[in-house]
Length: 160
Image (cartoon, rainbow, N blue to C red; front, side, top):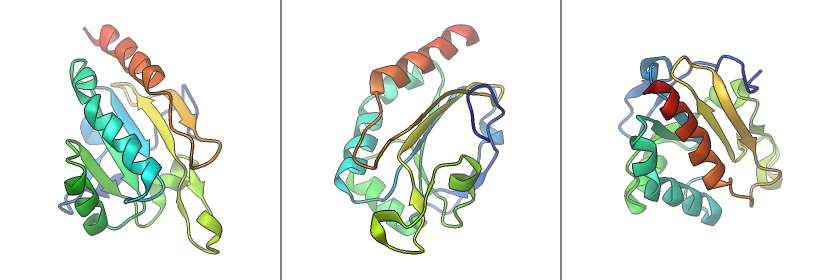
């Protein structure tokens, strides 16, 4: 289960260049996972652009931001390019990470059998422990970005 204080489930997912990115390879520094339902949708675009614009504050404490959606790497690549995203967007096309983190949104948008990611944010410390978990009550709700930044900043102060 992906709860605060538990070990974050590892994953290996392709980025927009179809190169595998694993959570384990990022150990030693904080990681922000931003699961989002679908590329090219309004709220998702706003959310990931907000993370893009906030990246300096995450980089200041050595944190890596990763966007994760069930869209194919090709769609994610076009979405990342259109929005000038400066962090990896990973493709969970097999829905393994959304299930491991308990953020699978089954029958998304009334489409029976289609599973997307629930909009959610996890902050993971350098040892791979979940320190912050937020899951939207519905796809139209964005995370509290200041809260996410504050959680990451706490981890940065512990690392220094």
